[in-house]
Image (cartoon, rainbow, N blue to C red; front, side, top):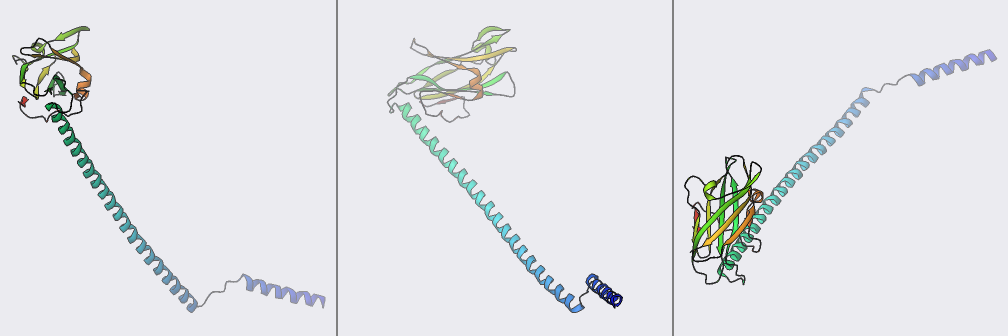
Length: 244
């Protein structure tokens, strides 16, 4: 009986093990139902993804339009502010020239500009002379331009005849309020300029008006009279701008 019992129990254990370890394959209807369910889920997810992608594209486009609108608005605002500043500066300039601002400075070099050319030895210059004494008369004279520097490690001062082109006459002026004078300066070979000196000689006056400027500062950017904030008059193609 014991042996028989052991045999029956062993047989049952073998059957249970086989049933537990064997894979029960689903039938065809169950598989079709699962496939249909998964297909619906995939379609739902695909639709949601496409909608989100479309919304993302719309948001990206809206952001681009917003950035472009901000850029245009900033550009217009900057241009508008620049125009207002220019108009205000010009108004202050002409008030100053007319002597209505309360400051009387007489004849002065208001602005100086040096512009490099294709040649590293030739520079174009632009001088703006002003006179803002109320009821000032028309004045005339000449502007002597000297260039200080070094040649062979020695200090040298070159006058107009040494830095001008050929027989170009020395710059002269005649104006009541302001005048621009422009020309060219040709540096000799091996000469290193350090300063530009402008000496204004007015006919009928003994007193000279002297101004000196660092060459490197002029090449880097235009110089303007520090005690005033009015802008240099607009540059024209003519050699001199006479405002008499």
